[in-house]
Image 1 (cartoon, one colour):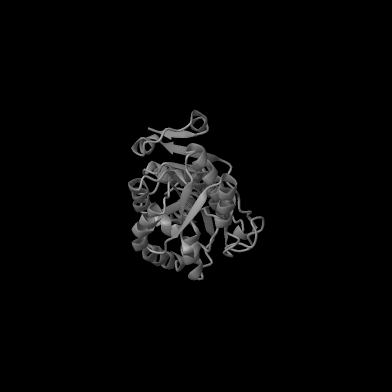
Image 2: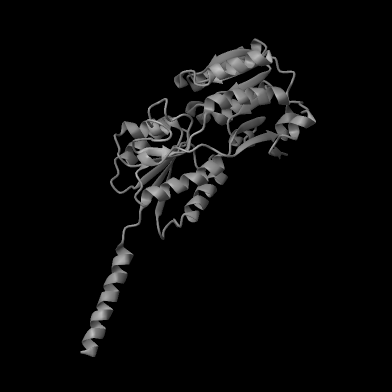
Length: 323
């Protein structure tokens, strides 16, 4: 009897071990709009750190896969279609409004976590920030107010600026433009609007603005313009335009300065939403959160390239100076 009991107990233990070995790991897909090589590595590192903080270890307690659109809208659309049709995904994490639009167009019911987005209410991604009410939640930032703040900061760093080129994507329907115009009036700055809808229009747009006396650049937030990051930075420096951008990735790539939320911190916090959803939370009941850390980053190499000297009071405000 003892032998039979021992054998039975052993069989149960083996069955339990086998069951655990075969247990399905929750699967999370990260959909990145950029190429992996151009994605700021700190942001992905912080996303992984956020997963670890929530005891989500890739390969042990969760399976995480990364997909990169390489800055190509058509590839982003194809990836969104492929992911949206999957039946084995528990959560999709992504960035920006274009990626969300492409995922929603698939009709997927997979929960979507926003690592970074502007206003998710205006395009109808969520009902309200407090009660998203669907399958989408995460972190958002108020780009409209930040657009105006960036003009203030650019002028504080380069007080001589009087005529600013505003590079904007017509597809964004003027989001934030009214705030920039209001701030420009208070600063006595003239704005030169430069709507650009294709890559081919970038060089002529810069040449036109330069011909009209532009001496500064503000680039409005846009997935399309993000895709063209390196080219736009090159054109701005070619025309010797002091520039300000929405995120420090642009500054590290050669832009003059940036002001905005710490995207790395937002990526880290997005992992908390993934953990809650995997534990059974309804994404529609999880309030969309706002950034809590904002950073002013200045590229001193680019400043020297443009022959600029910043006021000491301005440099004292910077969170980071890139030498």
